[in-house]
Image (cartoon, rainbow, N blue to C red):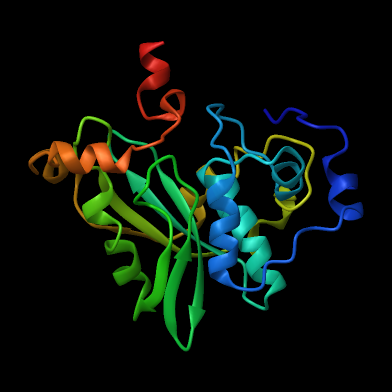
Length: 215
């Protein structure tokens, strides 16, 4: 059930002069500097701009909103994981090549330059760097491009409510492409310790996969 987060997010969103970001890279820099919260609720773009913090889904929605202001269609790429958190990034195209803007609690699942000829190639660029804090590989499927125009009923731009139930509907409405089955993923070797350390450098430990189970 959705619950109210901030009673004035929508009105503040419509009244406040938002920061002008003139390129996809400027958008990436903006979402990257936002603190990563440990809560599971999902806030609209309005609430993100008001509270100045975002997790991956909130960051992807915010990036998609800014991309729309630059003339891009607001679209997402959804990455599904096994024994790890799922991830979303905002995607865009430059001269037919795909790129991505992401907010992550890791250092390796964010920006991708617009050099990929297909969404599959873009999704696969995340595979070597998608692993949990134990170093276990975890990316098993992707879906996209997810056109946010199909999800307007969630009022993802200016809702005052928790919109966390929006992303689970991707599984029902979007075609998913399997990379590997969970059994295949589990047979892969663990990532080297130094790469794991680099990936989670500066992470909000309370927001990492498995942290709540241990608490």
